[in-house]
Length: 203
Image (tube, rainbow, N blue to C red; front, side):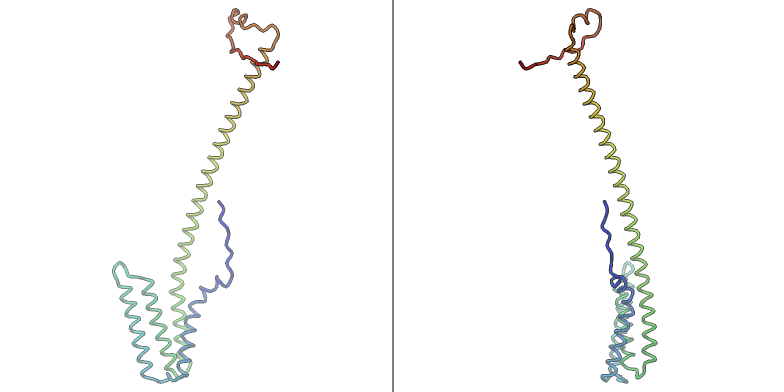
């Protein structure tokens, strides 16, 4: 059974690759907007962002160290939130672009490193699924071909039997219609008697 091929738009394929850079760039821009609106050299705002970033990092550590290996998705989300808050705090507190841009580059590299790991895992899962689906399709196709051959053979056997029966009936009818045909004479001669076919003719 053929599955329909789905063609994805280039934007849909490129969106996941651009997501980490888009996220860190958004945080940087928001931090600089916050800087322009009074956060520059504001100790209170910086302390708030430090507390929030530390809290998110602590939550990520607890999520990663939980029973059974922890929840990887929750831990990654918490650490990403912590990094985003730290980047926003630095971008809002600093009076220049050097340190925010440096932290943005580091955060983007780390985000792509984490995303690449998940992309590899998803790609392996997709390849495994495609491979298993291909094997199942091959098995089903083989079974269908065997069943088709078997059904064809049965049909040919049935046709051969029907043709043989038709030929036998035609031979019996033709023999019975021969002039001077006498079944008793065949029996007396020691030949096996064939079944007599009675013909009903319309008068």
